[in-house]
Length: 375
Image 1 (cartoon, rainbow, N blue to C red):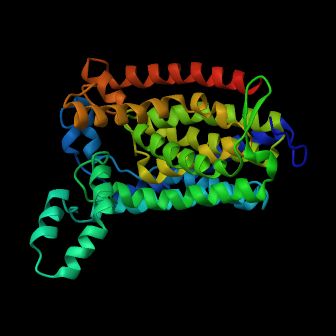
Image 2: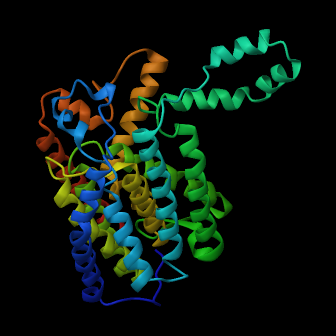
């Protein structure tokens, strides 16, 4: 386990930032809500969710409420907790991922329908196009075209926003920034993956692709879980609470303060997101906070515990992977609808029951992950 003695902070001082984040977020939440309603920042109905009764009123609920958390955390950190060693990269990755989410949200709201060329269409063009140079171009770019079409399987419809392959490219940049920081700047101790009971694996340079994958997957996992009122907010509060304590125990005072600030802002957001939600998180919040979660966990040396600390998010993401894989390979669905919270809704659970039970399940696994991290 990595332990840094410099920059430690008193727990009471750390928790004061949770209060500060809560107060600041509550103070400007009405302004944000007014702006979102005035600008009509509403995505409208999704075709694939039309079967869900609880989804009806959400057609008129603004998205991008996650700005409440992102802006609050960024401003407080820059003003009171700026550290070139431990907070500038997490904040930078959070803002970069949130910016990607904001672009996606805006395009989904104000953009036009986007279409990607189908693979069979490209194959026909390779055979019949009159220009030899264009045929050669289509052949050379065929693997990229295939990747784009496969990534569409994991996207939502209608397709006004950023395509999945475009998201992955920008998320790869955010993950690469994190990998560079951890591998090159934090030191050799971060080249190890630390497991419970004093087991350490020296990943060496392979820690770089591992970090990139974790940042990308976690950001998308939180994004996928943001599908019911209170679900993402409540589970993120539990996760960042555990991360705050682990950061403090391991001696990372600045990161503990950053996590505590995030808790406070999330408390205010979740207050307004409880059903019926005043606004929803949107990609701007879920992608930014998912990336921040991954970065902060790895920065304090808790990579091996991350699956349990973000349990519900990873289960939600894996349910989508399983569903898509099963449909396209075996021609059948495993769940009635993915992500899995909609499966439970379709078998008769109310939205409130699903959210609260997911909170409890998540809390149990976070406690287990916390226990593992202490060993």
